Length: 109
Image (cartoon, rainbow, N blue to C red; front, top):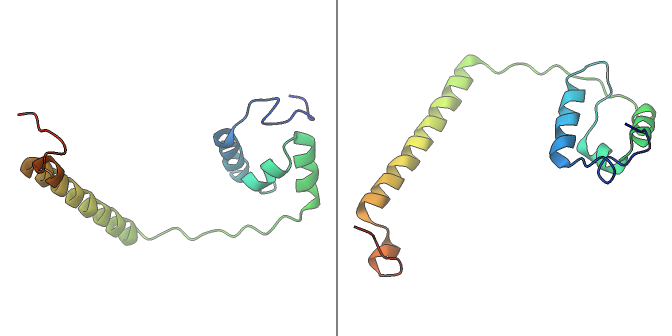
């Protein structure tokens, strides 16, 4: 890969590719953090490397992992919302939607 090749024009990269690139770089603590904004602002490897070398690396803070009860509560709430949505969809399709009763759409029996 040439260091002066444009990431998007010459190499065919897209925003999803660059998001994966940024995520992989962030996993390595010895590399400077890079954002999508950095990649779009400096689309060649050479310009990105120069920009990251000039910028001071902010100290990385270790985030505290969430507690297990919070994960369980979040999962339970998501399950309840999903179950409510499914129930509403089932009742709506069983009774027929108001637009189908007025003749806007025809129902197949």
